[in-house]
Image (cartoon, rainbow, N blue to C red):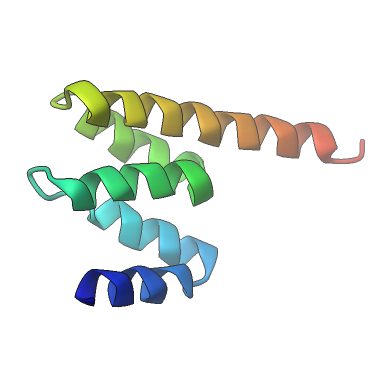
Length: 88
């Protein structure tokens, strides 16, 4: 129940604050919170989330490492799409 309440609180934050909180959740030594934070950053993160994700990737293995790669790719794709959508 506490985890669900925390997730709801994070979801209600403005985008910059949300990304900052999720980046802080990358710091624990592992576990499901870190994996969920990585995946959430893939959904809402911006370019500022990439360096912390890369730092975690250096020690990550398995599913966590794959999720980091997917999140970085998703962030880059969103940035590319946003650039292309801007009028000249």
